[in-house]
Image (cartoon, helix red, strand yellow):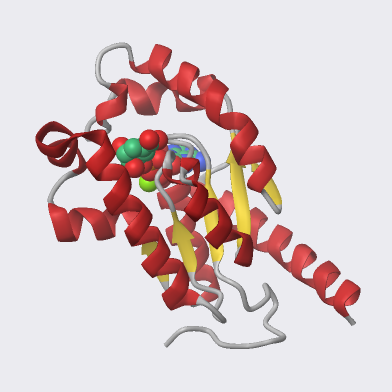
Length: 189
Ligand SMILES: Nc1ncnc2c1ncn2[C@@H]1O[C@H](COP(=O)(O)OP(=O)(O)O)[C@@H](O)[C@H]1O
Ligand SMILES: O=C(O)C1=C[C@@H](OP(=O)(O)O)[C@@H](O)[C@H](O)C1
Ligand SMILES: [Mg+2]
């Protein structure tokens, strides 16, 4: 059951994780949902379940088709989660879509912030991320440079994920969400 509450410790809005590839959106999102006993949606996983692997979609139908499917999938997930603290992990490029940007303004948006060093070993063994084919580090760095201002602009909370295990970062994120929700509630009263 979705966690419905107007006074829940982390608020009553969906929690949306954004940030570059391999920063930990999927892993930390799942961890956070477990801690909160909240539902978890990874929009990439929903896409794969409905359309096949991301590599296959890119190879067979192109990035544009992937982005259309992605925008629809994110919209459906955000709509279904309204009024609940559902945790939603997006793919790294999802927030480039202006419709998605608008939709997630109704959510608590968490930007997972890191640097190239943090993701280096993860993307070196990259599989399944077609945009990192070839020079993974060069591609990751170039994409991060253009997307970083978008992540920063959309973020309600920024979590530095350069240090700590997934479990530790889940705890740190929950604490940040509680602080944010309490401050928001105070302002609204
Ligand atoms: N803080 C962390 N410490 C160690 N490994 C991590 C951490 N965050 C993520 N990972 C691992 O890095 C890989 C990429 O993480 P993932 O959650 O898929 O990133 P994203 O969804 O942002 O692309 C996964 O194997 C994940 O388990
Ligand atoms: O940044 C991107 O454009 C992408 C990120 C991937 O998700 P992760 O950020 O979870 O790796 C996935 O959606 C696809 O390969 C495209
Ligand atoms: Mg992911």
